[in-house]
Length: 79
Image 1 (tube, rainbow, N blue to C red):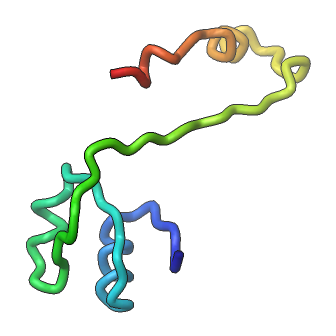
Image 2 (tube, rainbow, N blue to C red):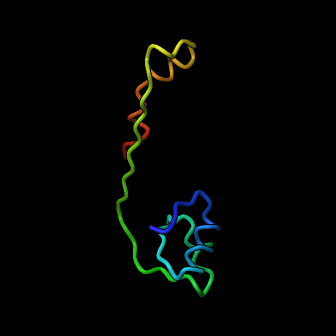
């Protein structure tokens, strides 16, 4: 692991400069692979990411924040 990037252009430049492999969503394929120095070497059909939220319940006093914390968002992440 050479780095973690929030910016796709920076990730692409870093990968090209270091002759490295990086992962990019197929949504960006046209922009990512239009350069001759970047070659697609494979695809992954299913990628999963998990998020965890840790908070002290007693510290949440604002009613709007309480409603957000008590809401079930699991339906947003199912296919």
